[in-house]
Image (cartoon, rainbow, N blue to C red; front, side, top):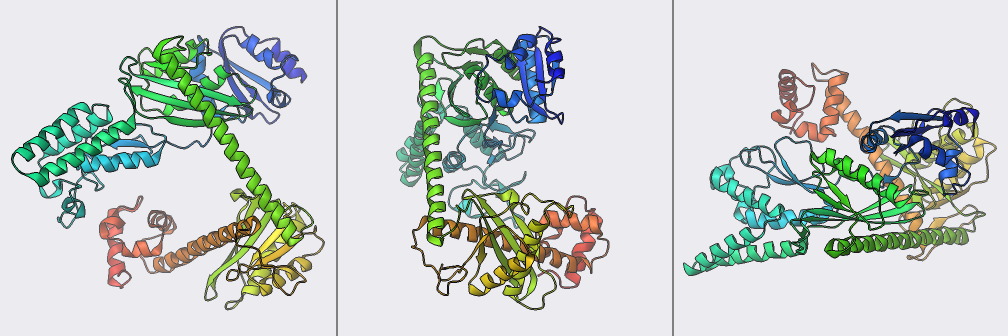
Amino acid sequence: MSDDVREQLGTLPRGPGVYLFRDEGDDVLYVGKAKSLRARVRSYFNRGDQRLGIDRMVGRVRRIEVIVTRSEAEALHLEQNLVKRHRPPFNVRLRDDKSFPYIAVTASDEYPRVMFTRERHRRGAVYFGPFANAKRVRETLDVLNRVFQFRPCEGPNPGRHSGIPCLDFHIERCTAPCIGAVSREEYRAQIDGVIAFLSGDTRSIVRELERKMREAAGGERYEEAARYRNRLIAIESLAERQGADRKTVGTVDVIGLAADGDRAAVQLFPLRDGKLIDRYAFHLENVEGQDRATILESFCLEYYTSAPRVPPQVIVPCDIEHTEAIAGFLSRLRGSAVEVRAPVRGEKRRLAELADENARLALTHEATAAERTRLRRVEALESLRESLNLESLPVRVECFDISNIQGRDIVASMTVFVDAQPKKAHYRTFSVHGLEGQDDFASMAQVVARRFARLRDGGDTGRHDASFSSVPNLVVIDGGKGQLAAALEAIHETGELPRVAVIALAKREEAVYVPGSPAPIVLERHDPGLQLLQRIRDEAHRFAVSYHRQRRDTRAFASIFDTLEGIGPARRRAILRHFGSAERFLAASQEEVEAVPGLPAKTARAVFAQLHRTGGAP
C-alpha cells in the first residue's frame, strides 16, 4: 500500500457515497457504492480480507476518489452512471454488451408495422420485450402475421411504388392497405389485436376467432371457417409456449442467481398478470471476490437500465438481504414504488427457488460446455504437434493467403489463431506492390518477408505492432510446394529470427506440405488437427477476399467519381458509406441517390443525370 493511499484511508467520510479506485496512470480500476464510505473502502485494504481477486486489484490502487451522496439509493444511481462511463476492468459485467431483441409496433403510423428490432429510439412506437431468444421472437412474429395479417413492408407508408400488391396479399399474409383492400379502422383493429396479445390478453382474441369460425361454418363458408380454425390453433399454441398461469402472483420479475469463481449465471422469469411470458438467461463475468448481493446489484444496474419497463415487484433469491438500495434505484427508474423482496413462503418462494435452480443448471452447463470446448482445442493442438512433428505446441498460428483477379489489386491477409481460437485484433492485411501479372509465389514471398521484417525490427522503427511483434509457433501458407518454398526463402533472407515452423495446406487435396519432404502429409478427414488447419485457412481466405473486394470497390468508385462534377472527397466518402459498393451505387434510383446523408438534393439529381447520360447506370 502506498503512502498516498494510506493517508487517504484516514480521511474518508463515514456517510453514503461512491468510491473510485485509480491506478498509476489514473485509470479507473473499480467503481463501488457504500452506505459508509469509510468502513467499506477500508475493508479492501484489511489484511483479513482473503477474497480472491481483491488482492490483484488492491495492489494496483494508487489513488482513491470518493463522491458523497445523500442516500444509498442515490449512490447506486451514480455508481451505474460511472460504470457506464469508465467501464472499469474489475467491475461485474454482463457478458456481451449487446442489445436484446424487441417487438416494436409503430403505433404512430397511419398503417402501423409490427417488426423485430434491437433498438428503442423510435418515437410513437410501442415496444415489447426485451427477449433473450431472437429466434423465438421471429417465430412469434410469423404466427402473429398469419393470424392478424399486418403489413410486412418497410417504411411509414404501405405498398410499392408500382401500386401492385405483393405476394403476401395473395397468400393471405397481408390485408393490403396499399390498395385499399382494408380500411384504416379495420387495419387498426388488427394492430390492436397484436398489442392485446403481446400484452397478455389471449382470451378475447381466442373468443373472437371462435365466433368468426362458428359464423363461417354456420353460413357454410367452410374454407373461411378452416382458415379461422388454423389461426385459432396457431394463437393457442403460441400462448401455451409463452408460459403457465399463476394468477395469484401478479406482475413481477423473479431473479435467480448462481456464482462460481469468476463466473455467474442469472435467470429472470418475467410474470405479467400471473403469466410466465418468457425466461431470460444471462451470464456475468468478473464476479470473483464479490458476494451474492453485490452481484445481484450489479446485474440490476445493467439490466433494468435498458429494460423497456420495470415491474412493481422484483423477487430476489431468499438469502439476499438489505435490498433497500436496489428498491430505491428501480423506483426512480419506474417512476413509482418498486418492492424488492426475498420471499419466505408461498408461490413466490417456490418461483424464487425455481429461478435459482435454473441459474445453477445454466452455470453448470456453461462450465461443462466450456471445458468440452477447451479439451477439443487441446486435442487439435496436440494432434497438430504430433502429426507435423513440431517442437512445441502451436499456441499461436498465423496463416497467409493471396487474393487477386488476373494480377490486379493483389492483396494478402494474415489471420491469427491463439489457443485454437481466432484473435481478430491481430489480423492484418497487405497490399502487394511492384509485381506485374499474376505471380502467387512472388506475392507470397513479399508478404511473408514484410511480416517477418517487422518481427525482426521489433519496435525500433517506431511502428510497433502487437501482432507483428509476437512470435508465431506455426505459420500456415495457403498453397502447395511453390508457395511454401517462396515463404521459406523469404523468412531465411530476413535474417536472424526465432525458430518458426512453416507448412503449406493445399486446397484441392487438403494435403499438408512440410519443408524437406517431397511427399505431403495426408491427415484423416476427421482429424481434429486437420479441421483446425482448415478453419484457419478458410478464415484467411475469407479475410483476403473481403479486403480485395474493398480495394476493388474503392478503385471502381474512384474511376466513377473522376467523371462526376460537384463531388469532392467528403461527398465521395458519404456515397461510399451509404451504398457500400460501386454496383449498388450504379443501380440506385434517383430517390436513393437523394437519400445519401450530406448530399444536397440538387447535387444528387445532377449526379444521377450524369450517370445515366454517360451510360454509367444499367
